[in-house]
Image (cartoon, rainbow, N blue to C red; front, side, top):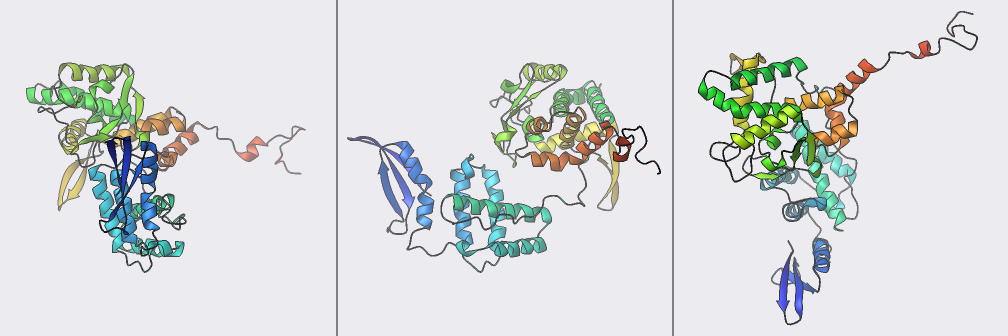
Length: 402
């Protein structure tokens, strides 16, 4: 990949761009510019120049994927921020699935029917969800190369695997009664006679209340910063990396948002952060004893599961031939409950999208469409078409016999 180097000499400050070139022995060529803006513009197009070099062979799918991965890692595709190391591993994994397919043509000779054949191969060898994601990554790669001038057109446009199926089950949403029981269980655990249990739930109780009252993703409230707890609510601008190894920015720009909270929740969270939470270098509201962030697995097993058992929100399931009790819900289901309450309260759909941190309103509709339909059905006046036309100007029923 290309890079920019600042040079200071007798002629002042210049910016040197080093970019790949197969025309030189070293594999790199250099161009110098007087301004950083010019250097960046040149660097942005260096990949396209390399790909369009007359001496180059046609671009293979694997070569195109490598370019796309480099962009994702070092520049950020489509103007976004560079992906995290954990996300990059996911990209590499799915890129390997793409290269495992027997492509018979170079990338710049592929057409829509070729992509359709690839889709069929994916659906025959992988789950529908995995096929959808892999095909989406392939299309992202094509778009990146089109934007950089390496491909002439988007031949993969319109070829996709639908993320929804009429056989898909809607998300499982706790009822208001379930949530009341869950919060009451947290209250009891925080006031338990057992000192160890009470101490543990000093932290888990405000976490649970916050999760219910905000609809935040677990990876967001686990690393919530004290400085982002405001008088009216919380600001979200960071999240636990999917691998759980580092704190990162939220996955998308839409995930950076402000959520209003109930005054009692704000007071509870602030009290814990300011008076009980261990000192830490990460400004965490809910750190562990050693000042690090909590593991999502520990929170699920030691915190949320315990609250579900205390609240009686369990059901029997057969695991390895044995019947065991498992929680009815997962921590993420608290987020679904929050969304359902917004819908019940007739909050504007665009506002719901913003509060949930969804980049696309279609995501909101796909997940909660059945809730929206139910609420609309319950509140709309059940007026039928014929009933609305029951009277004509003469006062006789339109449906009256002649």
